[in-house]
Amino acid sequence: DAKTTQPTSMDCAEGRAANLPCNHSTISGNEYVYWYRQIHSQGPQYIIHGLKNNETNEMASLIITEDRKSSTLILPHATLRDTAVYYCIVREGYGGATNKLIFGTGTLLAVQP
Amino acid sequence: GAVVSQHPSRVICKSGTSVKIECRSLDFQATTMFWYRQFPKQSLMLMATSNEGSKATYEQGVEKDKFLINHASLTLSTLTVTSAHPEDSSFYICSAREGGAGEQYFGPGTRLTVT
Image (cartoon, rainbow over all chains, first blue to last red; front, side):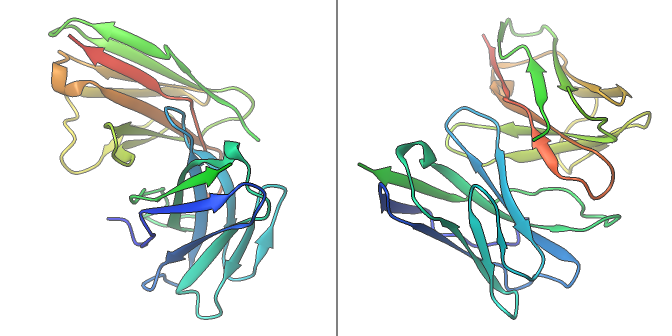
């Protein structure tokens, strides 16, 4: 079963920042937080991941709370092409028996013009 | 990022026939490959995990004799849906990972329709 909770859907205005929350209150010490997104009828696309420090790449920023029980994915300037289902997933690091991605229901982000 | 391809992208087959879907890692060696299935308006469901040269490990409720997985090389895995039925119609997505701690990269998916 998925170990994360996300809102079912969110809207965001084009050009504004999109902040997608995720709760993972049962995360264990060796589990990473991963974010993927899936545009309709395509395979999931990797966005970013982190363990406990905030992370940033060319696509997004990931803010993880100090207790690691929740995180927020930030798309700084959302465009219409960012409309997708965003999945927050916790995954064990190297060698873990659950070292695989189990998808929950995700958040459908609709970017509005 | 790493590229994973799938072939075919779409396939239509008659009930009772078998269908093979290929998954290839194009620019890295995939020690582990994963197969997912996605029904309309639902999330991805993991079907099985395979390590190169080993038998696949199937998730609970997935019939291993119906969904045959072969991972004979570090760049190729195949999923064969045997004796397909209309309820097997779905979007099948493969994923590949290099090493035990590498990232998982996903293929574009294969739309299977069984008539």
